[in-house]
Length: 592
Image (cartoon, rainbow, N blue to C red; front, top):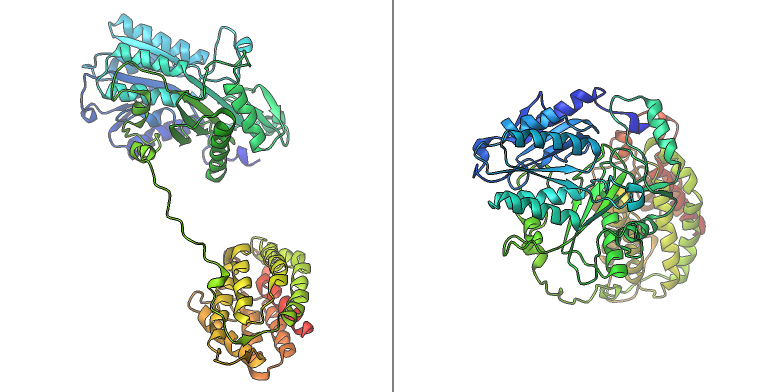
């Protein structure tokens, strides 16, 4: 139950520590610990008369919204405990004492959850009773809960809130008045649609393991929940599908005008949009990138929409939730003239920890010329040689050796699972299978043409450290064989092979310090080449490689992943790379 494991088990300490960290990473911020208010130091504000923008809500949604306090965004944020709204008194304290007294107005932004609306609303009314000029914008952008189910409560507030805060924060920074800031904030809300999906529930620090297990079991294995809320609230449906299928369902709920229960915003092909992909907090950057890619493809292919901007990252999180939210903002006219369009306000500078450092507007708007067309490098660029290698004999030698290596995959993988990361066998098998496929296309008796086929095949199909070593070694071998080229036809003899192999091992030393005794493939390769040079006997050389691989049992690694993989398993198994290579070399010897 990894979801139940946390570095901090006291949720109160976790919240306060996180809020204090913002004052460390942004020295212009201050913290009212008792009221959990993060606010800007008045001396950091360029114009104290500008509208102050305040937002807040329960903790656990970091960086939202305390991470958005800074130039061009929020003046202050009021935080609650994890997933719980701050109290009205906290809000009142913020509005009365933590904002510049010179400010000509206060705009409060709250997400549409009952606790947030009531407590921020009560704080706003208390401030108004003290003759403060305050407006409040409530953000509801979720389409997961339709009109029928949402009833009088309306849409929940999701990651679209971050776009609302960005727009009104930029307006306030430009000195726009309170009424216009509030009006444009509501304009953004009315043109926003968002929908989330998650693979599992989140786990709150300090709660029991059993509760985490119940949360996971509630969703079910292999299912993804569409419409899941940011506080673990149930979504609208559970489905078993792949990423393209999931994105198709989500975009349909957000944009399908025939779904009268959820068609909150009419977005047409001619409309300009901003796309926000928000990480709940537990999705890897790798997968988040794949999600962005799929969403953008389907938006263009299925709806004719190409977003003017794409904002991505964790902006409005849900602790460690393995989920994401898609938000689409339709760009409407603010009525405020040049420099104050929704697109320009999203592009406006912001200086806060939680707002992502986005690509500039200039980069987005520039018309890029297509790159010059260049012919791809092909094997035909390999210079022919007079080194002769019978292609039929080459196939008859390599095919059985490669098949032996493929058959040994399970054993090599087993060894590598003990002393490495378990991918060595798969890597060798993948490379062997790829070479087998290319062998029939080798018809020339020019040895260099054979290498022109084999070398790129290894490079493109074998990854990891061993793949790089084999690729370097084979390219070096080709180069060293060419050194034996003459003006007349020259068969590649065992003596030539041995000399070129020895030179290639020497060349490999430029890129790796590995030597026999380091528990690597060199423990098999070096003995093979040394014996081949001395005897010219491939069978004896293969035996030497086998002996070298066997000696790696119990040998402590000096290089490679085995160095930092714990345990004592290395005493029982050979180095998987050396073992795999010895199998291949023995296969060559048998074929010859």
